[in-house]
Length: 138
Picture 1 (cartoon, helix red, strand yellow):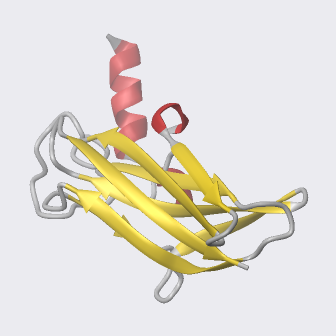
Picture 2: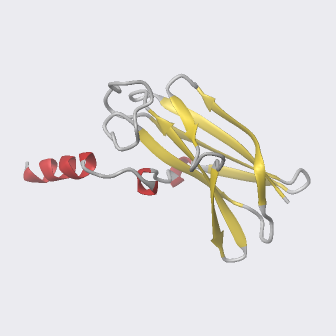
């Protein structure tokens, strides 16, 4: 019983930040089209256990909102240019989240390539939502 209360306290007392977004690697897929110079990434994630108290709650409210990072590795030596397309299905209770204003993705240098991540969040309880992003690179 004490362990449950400690876990609940840790979940509810966390501060906002990059750690609020987790990578759901199990369902994540990506595909690179070398001719079109694009990498498509997609994932299906499940919403939180409880209904949100407000529309589009912050990620710190982990009981009411699940926040994820969808990531893909670009081919070696290639650089991210832009998001060619993106979509959420169904869109009513989920959205993409920019890292900062005017900065839609996180870019990490991993050896000889870039790892590009797009943040997303879901606040519809127990619903599965599919996110797709196509990255353009050169």
